[in-house]
Amino acid sequence: MKREWTRWRVYRKARVWQYRPAMKSVPTQADFARREREFRHRAFPAATAADWEDWRWQLRHRARTATAVARVLALSPRERRALAAPDAWRMPLAIPPYLLGLLAAEAPDGPLHRTLLPDRREARIAPGELRDPLGEEAHQVAPGLIRSYPHKALLLATADCASFCRYCTRARTAGRAGADLAAALAWLRAHPEIRDVLVSGGDPLTLGDAHLERLLRALRDIPHVELIRIGTKIPAALPQRVTPALAKLLKKFRPLWLSLHFTHPAELTPRAAAACGRLLDAGIPLMNQTVLLRGVNDDLDTMLALNEGLLRLGVKPYYLHHGDLAAGTAHLRSTVARGRAILRAMCGRTTGYAVPHFMFDRPGGGGKVPLGPAWTSS
Image (cartoon, rainbow, N blue to C red; front, side, top):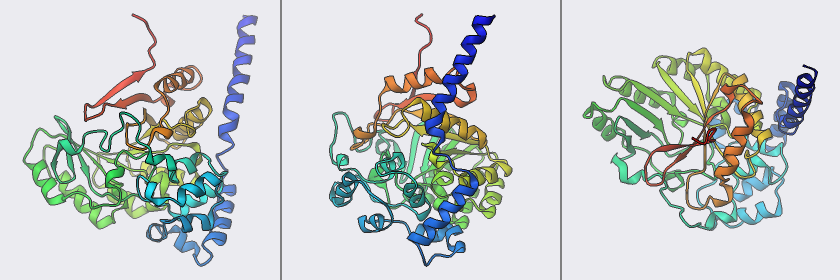
């Protein structure tokens, strides 16, 4: 018994030590409010507090050029060189003021910088990388509508996002026109075998309330569509968008599921917590899908802090994706071995609710396959 107690004390000490580095990046509510206010006064002196709360103002004032980014952020020489070469970017640049504030709070070349700022390595196409890694264009049955499985369809309602993640699978469509909704809805009505529709993009929550309500009403009126899901990064990238009006709108179309996209504990701000809380109060279940990213979240400390932080917000960590073979993303793609090692280490160190499924989308549209870790040899 004495030996077991000694082991437990050592285990507890080790566990606390593992958490310490990642948890430093999560601010208190008071610290976050002060930091955000100071950033607004410095970077956007003409903006009022009401402007900052307005998601439309945030979208209108996204940083889209190297000049706009350099004006408000401290940058490393590597980041400055990449911003000076827009011809090498794999997709447009778009960062709302809210996210610029999060970037300003971390050092240059920090984890959020790596996910949002261009990198000159985006111009390098590694062997096996593809422009359309999931073969979506080959499975398109109407403009912006992909039949991903026999009973599922993916509706790309828009190609716009609050911000463009540099590892995006759909970089080829970023900022372009979205789906032909009339044609997509007509196809869905004519195919009763489709029971599950994922509304994605882009980010469908960048649509206005009226547009979004028309879309959800049209889907809900199709008798054989039983499950409607929305894929969004809005609670992480622009939580101001989750207004009481939006929550009330979404509540009308329950059962409705939201798949969120948090990648690092620095995104788990008080604003993100409030946005998730508002959605949960509306009866909307929240799941999270994270991409394993080199130098961003591919370590035990960060993954524990992220997933346990999500649980505290009422969000279930669902998938950890190995990076798709999207062209120009090799510098951000971690390894399967590293992902397996992280998940194996998480087991026994945290609740099972915090351990996501490790998945990989097979190139060409072959669907998702689990990557482990394996626990038995036979």
